[in-house]
Amino acid sequence: MRVLEGLQPDRVFYYFEEISKIPRGSGNMQGISGYLVQFAREHGLSYIQDEAYNVVIFKEASPGYEDAPGVMLQGHMDMVCAKRPDVAHDFQKDGLRLAVDADGMIHACGTTLGGDDGIAIAYMLAILESSEILHPALEAVLTVDEEIGLLGADALDASQLKSRRLINLDSEEEGILTVGCAGGLNAEIRMPNKWMEAEGIQCTLSVEGCQGGHSGTEIDKGRANAILTAGRALYRLAERAEFGISHIEGGEAHNAIPKSCRVSLLVDESQLEEARDCAAQVEKELRAEYAGVDGEIRLVFSVGEKATGRMLSFQAMEKLLFLLCEIPDGVLRMSPDIPGLVQTSLNLGVIKMNERETYVETSIRSASDSERRTAADRVAYMAEFLGGRCSRTGEYPAWEYRRESALRELMADTYRRMYGQEPQVEIIHAGLECGLIAAKMEDLDCVSIGPDIQDIHTPEERLDPASVRRVWEYLLEVLRQCR
Ligand SMILES: [Zn+2]
Image 1: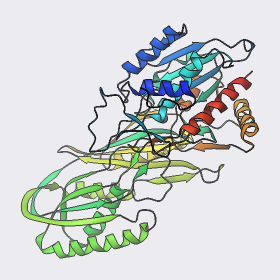
Image 2: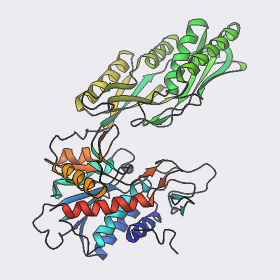
Image 3: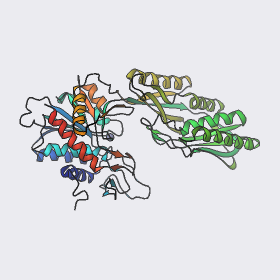
Image 4: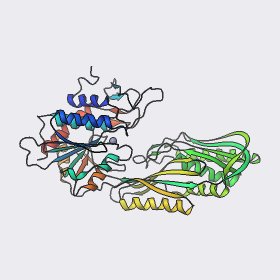
């Protein structure tokens, strides 16, 4: 029995359901990659599977399209694994349990659905198996591990690809043609810790209740960064009371705006009242500043037992506070070309501490490769100035907007003809694989599209089958026009 039986287009939902049976969280790519290879063999299509498990499947042009330049279709096979805490699901070996809501939306029971980017795989397989769909020569590029740093696109050998037109299928909103995206990198700071023995009352200062969000698409919403908010509260506290820091920990991932941060303190007994007052005062300010964007923000100061323990030396604490108060964060520059688009941003996403060092992870994004490097230089300079180190990882280039794009024109025209309205043409402040692929190929013309998917990367992820059908019809029409 198929759960998605009866939904149209039937073959797209057939493949979506088939691949949902194969666990394909990032890093677990062998199974899905093998399935795609098997598919290619069964359909007599030539293919390449590389060492990273990326798969490219080739299909010849339909009759009448032999002379048309080829088209690359592209999406990623991995998905983010997130589940509700009450759900038993082993992403290593369990298939997803698909369901259709009362309102017709597709979701998975208690877990992410993997519509991002499973729908791209389903579209591609349904096109590749068909003998009726009209299209030029196709190269279907299915990459691994996009969600953990675009690893598959990075490893991809583009010299085997001939198309100079790329339709990426990893967008989540129908009616939008994405034609450019930010590049990014992670800058990781390590500050050496020096400790001293001290005595005092064990207290904790926690920032809680922040909304968080995606470090790219939601960086301009004016939400609180819980870690920097904790830094600011500590600075104020240091003006009024004597205390030491014995631990700090906050944030969930480099690419998420941190929702909470917790600092363990040793506070001088005579200063407790002052510290408590100060925390209450700062909380009041925060509530006023973030009313409307982060209205649930709380600064909780709790008092424990008297204890002796270690705390950061005064100098190490001073440096940490300086870092948390002065590091660039949030929107660094808006686009000079496109109103409302963030050009460059930084998100301080994680802070952790062990005996030896304090670790801070930031995610930098920019539509400009030079601005991205400059932002990273600022972070590195600050870290080094304070006696720490900074390393850069996961760097990928921006996908720069092309003033001339025949593919964009063709897709916009097709959209107008089919729907009688203008598509939105957008550049996004988030990463897509197109940038990495375009950087490897001379003169690659790309556009990214996709059907409506809500709440991606969360257990509430929902895919709209009506939108899947419309985007399918649109995609087929675009291919038919690619002569
Ligand atoms: Zn995706």
